[in-house]
Length: 237
Ligand SMILES: C[S@@+](CC[C@H](N)C(=O)[O-])C[C@H]1O[C@@H](n2cnc3c(N)ncnc32)[C@H](O)[C@@H]1O
Image 1 (cartoon, rainbow, N blue to C red):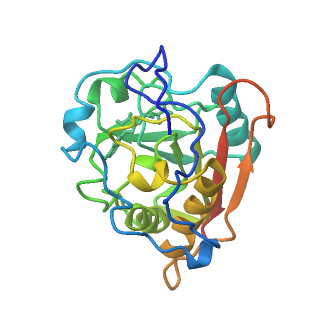
Image 2 (cartoon, rainbow, N blue to C red; image 1 turned 135 degrees about the vertical axis):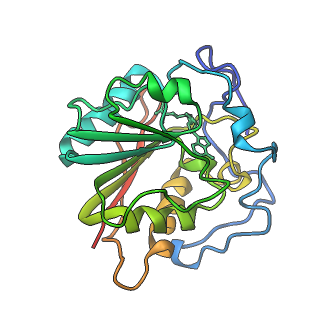
């Protein structure tokens, strides 16, 4: 994996992930084992330190951002929505009735023009969401699922706070902060990233708090220049 600097996000690596020789073959998603160290990171320090300085940047190009907004519109996201691992932009084409943004940088969150409430909260320190059961119509997480060190717990919590029928929509590209991404993400291919996020859905299902079949999509035209935009989403059932 070669980390390429992105002018808008100097610390953020970019480039298609390829499985280095010696990395585990993850196999079919249902049988995926999480190898030791899968959820560790180069920088083990608290995320609050990494995100304490403001980054008023975009993490993907304009086409990929437009693809996120178009997906949210196509899926009809609205009502009371939670944007996890958020910053100063949430990419909705139409502002939801109520948008709660949760992330680590207070200045970025309070600058988010679509947000009605900002919550500074470290999901890697405590994956329990500070919200009531069944209190959101939809939950989004844009270009950030790869930083979660307790993804199954977070997905389980997202299911708890979603109303039945609500969608949890993850979108991601092939860029990341190399010191903060989980090692498992760097050991797997772009195609496997979709399977991995789908696996998070499957493994986070609880009796009475399940998910419909996760949908994995490439939302930008394949083989074209620019940042690819992948989506993995599932409905609370
Ligand atoms: C790559 S940025 C993406 C921001 C935004 N979702 C977007 O689409 O531009 C990653 C975001 O995740 C948030 N984040 C990173 N680690 C986090 C954690 N442990 N808990 C909560 N938020 C976190 C940061 O505040 C940062 O804004």
